[in-house]
Image (tube, rainbow, N blue to C red; front, top):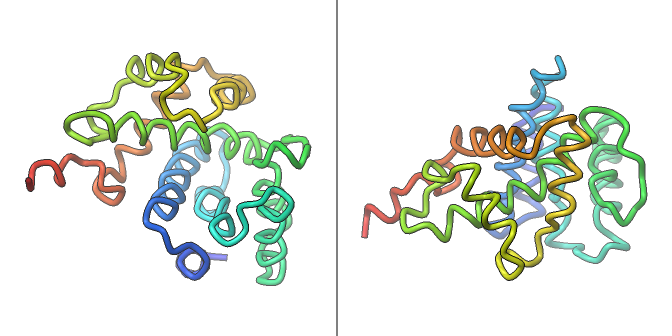
Length: 191
């Protein structure tokens, strides 16, 4: 199990740029959280990278992430990696017991939400996003309506973090790959 192989798997099953960038964002957040739990940074990063790799092909809850889990099993991925990916789907009802399970659930929705906040800024840059901006947007029901605020809050609680600390850590992780995500403000500067 290595990142290069995981990236190939992601690209083979995910064609849209936005979903690939979401995977990279979740990977960055997972890599940022792994050292806190004295965990394998590479493994946690791969879990983030592959958590939704089957979503584009099988977005129906009866298929996602179970189809992806079967593909991962066929490719020899460890059981704890597969379980963490399955447990991030709340509708499967699987308990999230390991720190890796909890972290994936905690960062998934928040990464998407923080990116949405960045994209409505004039700079289109994650580098300008502050914790207060994310929390303010969370109160706006119409903004990024599909993102579960409850999951974001539950995710922070499951990690034993305040919402502020969780949002800050996730934003910092996204800032570390801002150019890769196209969220460094360069696209706006080029206009």
